[in-house]
Image (cartoon, rainbow, N blue to C red; front, top):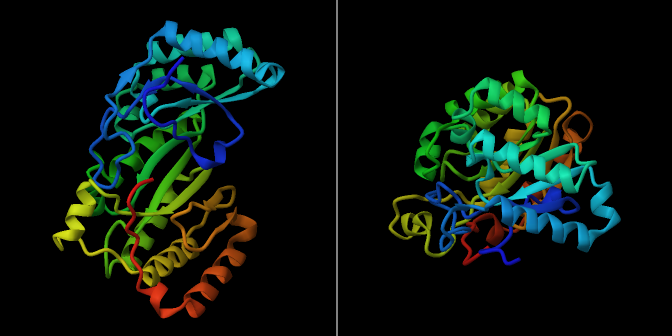
Length: 296
């Protein structure tokens, strides 16, 4: 079987079985993203999913048969209707009967289209640990990112997931509000995360890729990116204001200049100290650097 496009998955799912469900992204309009620029969104048919599962069991053998977790590949698997998702989950359990947790990317808008009853059915089928592009706690920044929803929308849908018992892993980006907004952005992100209580926070730094709207905005001086020092100060204030006991914090992305991770209830001070050291000692040249890159 061939897959159209690059396979992306969260770094923390490095050892998880991967199963293609969709290609591309149903939204594909975020200002900073070129991951699916040339890939048309489509749902893989049941027969295609069946064939991929057959290959997974053959290739991975006993590891696949004993696996308890699987990640559904694609920029937007949660765009599928509940019946279509449940039909694919039924196939998964036919081939991989020990699977207990089914995880994937889920846009805020696609959570909103599902009723509480549908979310409960998906939870009972094993859907959990949804990866959600929260990105920012500021509505204005979200509009500029072209997400198609704002921070208030994300809050509403994540609280629905919490009530039903579906955990969520929140993807956030530093620098989304631009120069001079580090403190306001950090405090807004912290307020939002403290309210919606994710199981994990995955943090990276916004980067302007070639052939994206964000890169054009920077070149035209329509958006002034934060300096590296501002990015580090935003991260430091964000973590300092988090009040989450059971949340894992991950900031080990290649775009993150300071690599930190740990449980917020036990490693928070250590992470803050590392950021303090970086802010005080990093060279002036690096402090003024902005994140602009060609491709992912």
